Image (cartoon, rainbow, N blue to C red; front, side):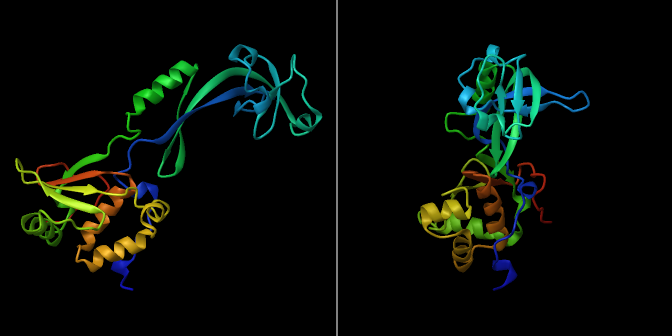
Length: 248
């Protein structure tokens, strides 16, 4: 297979369309101090004590290990759990951590002091759809002449025909831009197998066989990995940092 026909191997840092977080959720953690020369650590409370309110956790001594903590004052700890915890400490504060994912990588967005503050942060970072930054306007400088000619020819001659390649093209009458609706995003193997019963390499090959320019395919792939749904190429739009630029 020609190298140009192979799906690129990409890292998160090489996807300039990646913005925002998926699967935002809140985790209640205990900030624990222990031996004087050790930095504080964070642990979730064990499931058996998850019902305890914050005021019955904060400033209480605890047992902990790498996975959880148990309050020991006023509580009976089963022997099997006691044996799992080799460290003792003091819960200094209850923290509500806002956790999100970006391209399947876990990120800690922030630490708040109450559940209400954490819920407010999640609300501010989320729209009703659960996603944001799904529409992008980028400069046509990110496509070589061959790719722009392909787009212009398609919208001029096949405006009423669908590509059938998980992207559809349309014109913007009030400007010189060309829009692209991406379908079935993100274009990961897991998602495409679920909705199309095939991996991305099969979709890419179909796009190539249909005559789609490689440079356009690669831009669409990067956008689709970041779950972009609408992509507009406009000569007056700004360039996107991290995305290849082609000389006129």
